[in-house]
Image (tube, rainbow, N blue to C red; front, side, top):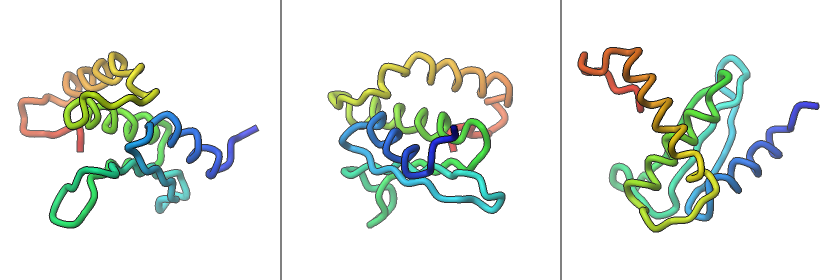
Length: 110
């Protein structure tokens, strides 16, 4: 049985920890688009920092990886269940950079 959108949202919120806000929207192809925001940090002016990753099979992992990196960099003392997957997130980032030619000015994290 496939989990509902609200169930996926609750699970992601628990994984992301207390500093996160999580929402799941539908993108243009009717796939889940994950948005994980920080309750503390600001990105530009009044906007809260957030990671938004549209649908596809790895939308959840891509958003959560970005959130993990944000926690490690900006909130090093924070505790969140997703931090248990830091090594895997770093490995996926390394693989993306290797596959995309990181020296060509591309930013695989955005």
